[in-house]
Length: 112
Image (cartoon, rainbow, N blue to C red; front, side, top):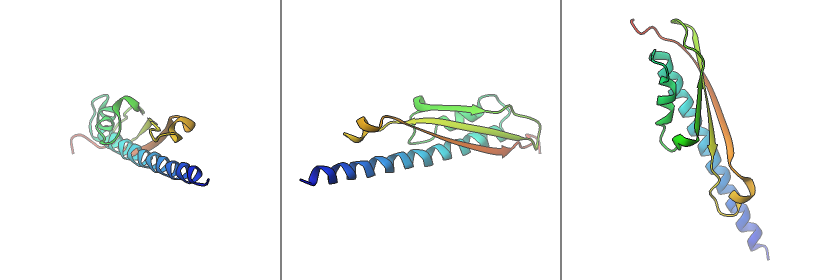
């Protein structure tokens, strides 16, 4: 009688772990994007760096970067990601989860 409830609870724990993994990967993608934007003056450097993060679907990523200012200014990169809930039964109940991370980094001089 309790087996379905226990099984559903275990599936829920697995889904929570997968969402936590996605959050960690999104923080990593935001950090990579901010680092790329801080050292590369080319527009779109943050998005290119964030999209190659292993474990994330590039189609689920949305990268927003503040304008790059002069050396020693701050650039902010925010990454939004829609994590799919693929675990059977639980995914249907929860729906996709949106995770977000933001990182600020100081712009470096390209010619030291």
